[in-house]
Image (cartoon, protein in one colour):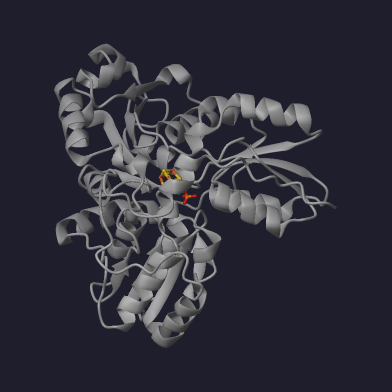
Length: 401
Ligand code: 13P
Ligand code: SF4
């Protein structure tokens, strides 16, 4: 069968975002060392040599959305949750090089020992969704919920894609962490803590309103009217005290800048052009996109779905482009289409490139530990409570359409 995957048109601004650190970006972090030139023809060889010389002292983790040039050096690949566990399973590795984004490296630091250094090759690799819930905003929201008599009936749940400070907040307030593959189990657990799904208890879901809404409505059977959005820039999040009292799920006003780009029109176009296409999307997509898709699931689910798909079947996939391109290359016997018609990389994930990886590995070899991610002790302990509550949840049922 001929290859059907078509690279979307490149938007110059998005491609540029992935190339180098941007001193005027939200984090504004310059690389503290001498980065090799991206044009250096020996980069692959340099990375290979440095990794080989470091041997078992270094363990490289690669998130599914990383560039091919980086993924080729990963000891393991996975979603954010799997990678945090993989890091915890390597207590002998002195250096954990996390090719992902800041919140993932924080989680790895929480789950590994103090003797291990977790390193993020580019400190500007943040996550715009995680940055949408600042700890002072969340503390302020909780105080307001307390004033209107709602906080005592509310369990905070935070998506893995949040800062360590937000995870610690959930640890302090009897809440838990969840991932895109166990959000349903986590929400059911949360409601059980406050009188069950049929009671009047609530969940404060952070920071991704779409994952929260999709899970509450499509998996727990709540209605859209049971959900309110909390906008941190408005008093009471833009709600009345009565609306908060009646709500079952309070959704933090955050979203993923990658998955939020997909539109129902993209689904319609693919359905018109490709007969019998299966639309498969990540639950960070909007409710409208998810309800118009055939299948919805986490990154790991998307990979497994393609592995299990019939030869000749057609798939329109709504998640990050690096992953979709790799899936298309891995399944030449299936038709793999990207759901969007313009480039949809995660620009912050893309900041980790081969020059940063080479610089990191060569620095380690020279006895320097660059870009170490350290979560303070108290935050670690409290965040660990919320992570352990998640780990104690019953295993999630396989995701389905
Ligand atoms: P997972 O890593 O849990 O699949 O989440 C997707 C994502 O957006 C990662 O930042
Ligand atoms: Fe954050 Fe979305 Fe990028 Fe994941 S894909 S790191 S959620 S901006």
